[in-house]
Image (cartoon, rainbow, N blue to C red; front, side, top):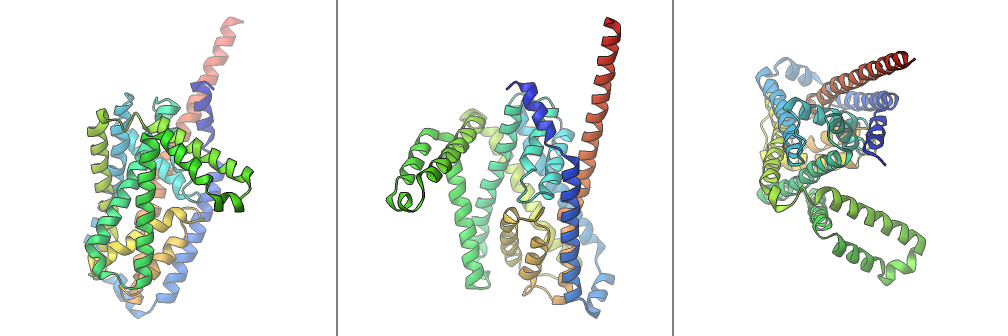
Amino acid sequence: MTSGDSKHKMQEKIDLNKAKRGLLIALLIGVLAIGLIIALTFNKRTIEALIAINVTYLALSTAAILMSWIFSSLPFLILTRVVKKPINFISAVYVYLGGSFFGFITPFGSALIPTQIFVLTRDGLTPGQATAVASSRATISSWLFAALGLTIFMSFRSTLPGSFSTSVLIAIIVVAVVWSLLTLFFITRPEQAKRMVSRFFKVRIISRYVRQEVLDRVKDRIFSEIDYLSTNLRDLFSPANAPAIFMVFIAEVFAWLALFAVLPLVMLGFGISSNLGQIFLRLLILFSLAPASPTPGGSGVIEIALAGLLFNLVPASFIGLIVLVWRTLTYYLTIVAGGIVVTRLVTKAALGGRENKKSSNSCHGTRS
């Protein structure tokens, strides 16, 4: 397949009809969930809280979201320089917001990385380079989330509310850490990783209860993923690029910290100060649930989960308002900004297509 063919396939990934359908479903489920939460928690104190809201803290929470966008865009700026196809900062923001838009309106965020790859190819990167950049950023972000989770857990474990929450949090962190280590192993030692996988599939208890054709199919899929990770990411994670990778880590640290800061700032806006450790631990659980949600952008699941996690932390009459404001800032605001970016990209592509068509017709007219 040629580079041009690959690029054409990337461009086909933006399906406006699917985008509209996903956006409609996400908005419908989200609005219904928030409406239900507000209805169940609404009383006289809710109105008083709304009237007495501190606008300064709302402004700060909005600023935190904008900062998270900026720091989340910087890895694309840095990594494109590593692959010798640098883009400017505005283009990096477009990559982040455009990808987030489609990631937020598809189940499991499945369109996030393909959209980032599409936008990067429009900026002059080859499909292989774009895949390496988008995959590297996602890998580093997941590693960092695992590290942050471990740090938060170790720092605030004494404030955990109960055995169930403790078990859930420990399970999430263990899975994240193990997955991060496996990903690193797959990138740096692909052949050893394949041998390890082959040995695992030869374990008697597995071969006894699972058909051989199923095992072969799963093994081939894993081998394909190992080859994909190694081919696209090994060069980027070479020692020569260590300073750039370190800068990406730092940018991701600030991006996550800015995102984590939104909820406590929103709570302060309603005059509620709570244990920061408890808030961070609950956010850790929430952000871990989001990628596993089958609804577009986690709509409905995230709102209800946040309401449940806040139940013993804030007065019930405030929960609906806090969920509404937090979700508006962290989700709907990004959808609006990402939608503007996607609209600009599609419009620009359409105009470019018309110009090429006119140019082609002009050339044919000249030849005839």
